[in-house]
Image (cartoon, rainbow, N blue to C red; front, top):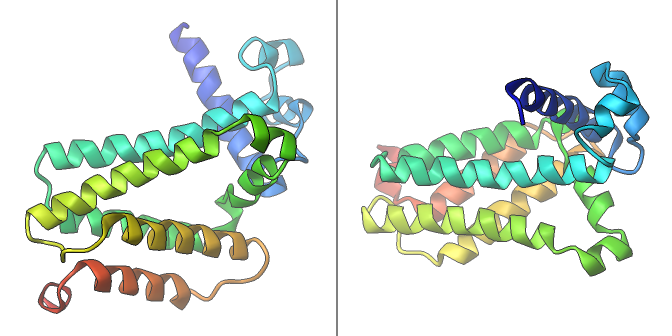
Length: 198
């Protein structure tokens, strides 16, 4: 694909992301995306066949990007605590940002029995995210920056607390203290008291 084609696809995904975050998955149409991007139907269909195809590409990009970023930082010997703090700060901001959350759209998409029966991409995304976090936690344990913990259990605390708050943020106003309390508890699991206080 040409550079212009790549740029157009990126623009489509950015505009579609905003629509999915605002309206959920079910209420977004190709017509909506045409209106947001200024593309004709033919122009949009030249790049994507359906809202489903656009949505899955957006969802897939998240976990892959996070995994690549974590792996690159580990390879460059960035301290595990620095990587952890960056990730948790980002998660804290995202937890209360209901306007930019795809959690409801993801739930709507994957709760469809026809999709959940034939599509395991949500499991793939979970596994990609899990492998990235486990790699980071094991790296922190190896460098003695993190406590010896069960990496998978800590990942589950992180991902389900994060997604739970994001879901609730679509339904009610979330107090800023909630993400901070969750982040503090995660740090309490991973970091010694001396590191937390130092």
